[in-house]
Length: 205
Image (cartoon, rainbow, N blue to C red):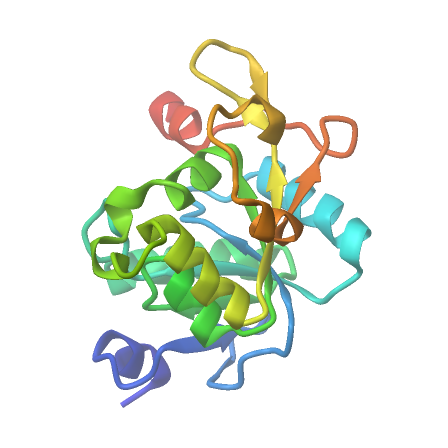
């Protein structure tokens, strides 16, 4: 059984596919990781990862999960198409079966995750953590505690919202508890801005 089959059978939690298409179980140490579906991969993704890498100077990877809290499991054929897009750019891909960043942080400890504002908003949505309701803190705080314990943090890029306004961290109504402030670094509009959308690209096609 190859590594992709083992991942889908949940025998392993993550694999890495290099630019040459060769897969390994060896997950990188403390990488910079842009998580997404990349359907399709576009120049905005590449520019976001490049801008984040200029901030932290770590080895950069894309990450796709075959599981998603809002979507059906990713078919193997579709994963292969998206992996091929990334390989063509010379990039490396981490493939996980982790639905949420709590699980991703366990599989890729020490990672700095690069996310957009839409992902940040989902990260702070308690509906995604029904299993993390415990003690005096909220489910979101308990989730962030787990991510923090795994040594992970986030770089958050702004993006255009439904009202065509460029939104950054400071524009969000809810506040991150003070003890988590250092987990989040803002990628400013000056450092990165792209109005490209995978959804819009698919619709035009």
